[in-house]
Length: 354
Image 1 (tube, rainbow, N blue to C red):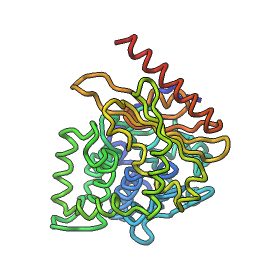
Image 2: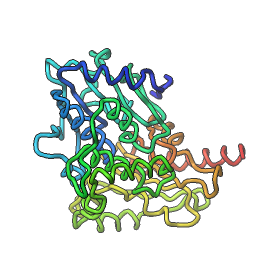
Image 3: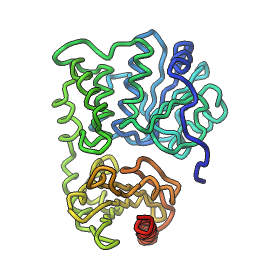
Image 4: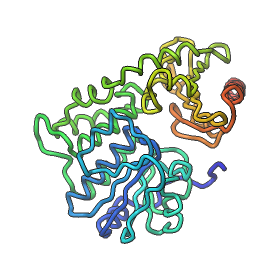
């Protein structure tokens, strides 16, 4: 069911930080199958709170891309690949980062619902459910780590030493979220505030070149083969404005890859001049398809663009205006047909409105 609540900020930074400081044992988590922003957000806040002496159980659920898994030191993160990941019995505050969707929190959803008054959230997405009654939501931020900057500043914790190179710092974790959620500062969300923050993080010793190599140049040997499979499936719809790629379970088996090897693949067709939006459909089960939507920013300032967050909402998904996702309970052929119909209807409505 689609959320109809107002997903907005409900507390001040001072009020949220007061709850964080008062807690004796915190549980910090994010959405299932965390990306760079989710990983960076959990690491940054966990490191900040631990520096103040807090006991923190930081949990990541589901598959975690090998390229970002190595950002955490031994013992910093509890990785739970399958099943539930509930807080300890003496947990007195749960923090949910980079999501407000119950569908992305199955690993701890029941606990969060039973302890609603003990849950706070920080997010930058446009839509969400009532996961955290106390929350800070800033959809104008390019990443959740960018939202967390003000929280960590309010805590009074420095991001890192003033050094030429420093690893495993709060600054590094913040940078990872910011860099990955802006496509390494290529997406439209990378505004002047983002670059000002990047400059601040670099003065704390962030090794941007080393991080880029770790995350973007550490693919498994099968990744280029998987990319080839996706591109071989490429078709165009809606007069060439929509690019659609498909990956079946057999594609992963035959290339020796997994869902962890999909990062950035959906963006491949975006280099085509006529394409306004790219869609990647991935078969999870014979009757379950995961869909990733991406769209280009306007060709001119304040010009038209495809709001893929709106499109994903048709399938109870969501995300951002230029990057969103959803799950469709259907066969691959049926899911592709449904997506194409939704895209055509959206573009027709947008054309009529224009």
